[in-house]
Image (cartoon, rainbow, N blue to C red; front, side):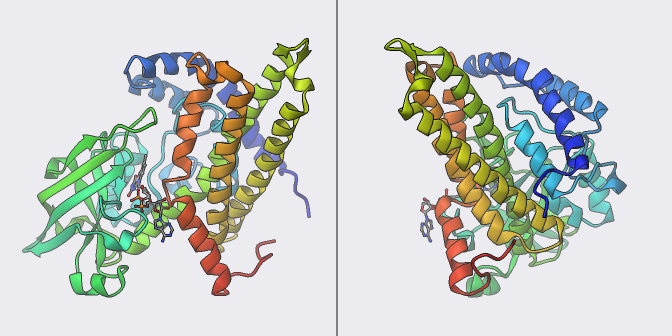
Length: 391
Ligand SMILES: Cc1cc2nc3c(=O)[nH]c(=O)nc-3n(C[C@H](O)[C@H](O)[C@H](O)COP(=O)(O)OP(=O)(O)OC[C@H]3O[C@@H](n4cnc5c(N)ncnc54)[C@H](O)[C@@H]3O)c2cc1C
């Protein structure tokens, strides 16, 4: 068994690492200034320029199948890419990508929504959560009622990432009330709904530097052909969308924590108190050691979740573990690193407070800590997985 990264993975990691160092990290001060003066962190033009630069290195459509012009790197490589890219808070995303569930579209939908999204001409968002249905998605109330060749959607969604900017939403609505009432999983359908069809969005202010949106559907009429996947098959699509996002949180936390820990190591050697650098103190050394151990643990959990998916196996148990542990590790590390920086860590002179606020979200979205624990313990208690599986 060889735990080292194979050469082809290093060939992906090294150029990404250089891209982050040479192109993204130098933009951090500009991003902080923009955000503090109420402007978008990065303009669309700047993001476009960066995406083209990344494309020169071959990083375009990293999770997009080759038949759609993507690099289709596979999950392990994606995990490594996310770990590298998360060493900065510059909100860069690779061009040439689309939500995983858009590939369930028929040929017409692929032409109208998938390809323009991959090409960066359209923006999408995914809407499951409602004011009364977050962890408990079975509680959704948004309905779609058939009227001739159209479906009429009514309801409210909340906390939708990208909902302020999206040209279309993939929204989950109840299409068979009785079936939905029976299990909460049946009788829901995913619809592709253009903004021009009439839904409205409103910005939600959060602790972070970007806000999700609340969406309102008031008698929004959607043609029959805009059903994504199967009628009443929306729950499965929802799980698939969330499932991908889940282990990626682990990868993001690893990258960010690595960068933060390096900042703490550097600072602790420069900062003198009582005639000695604080790095000489055991109180500081232990915080560094604990962080390093936890980063490695999160790295291997995340890589195993990604590797398992690459083998075509069910990775949901590992993904829940990678998300739970990674998100909490990231929060512990950013807190320690802020502590090691003392008062300076608390200021807006440094980037740490920004990461501190951002990391808090990791424990909430794509399934809270409590929901991940529920999944992990249920799998073990019901015997779906055994301790020590997945090696
Ligand atoms: C910035 C942001 C972006 C988001 N993006 C999207 C998006 O793009 N699309 C989308 O559909 N959703 C999105 N969400 C929604 C997100 O997935 C939900 O906020 C999350 O699932 C939690 O739901 P909730 O907020 O309703 O909390 P609740 O479900 O009300 O939970 C409240 C508390 O109770 C706990 N709890 C709930 N049930 C149990 C239980 N059975 N046992 C123990 N504890 C429990 C929870 O863990 C939590 O601590 C986003 C949220 C945020 C904040």
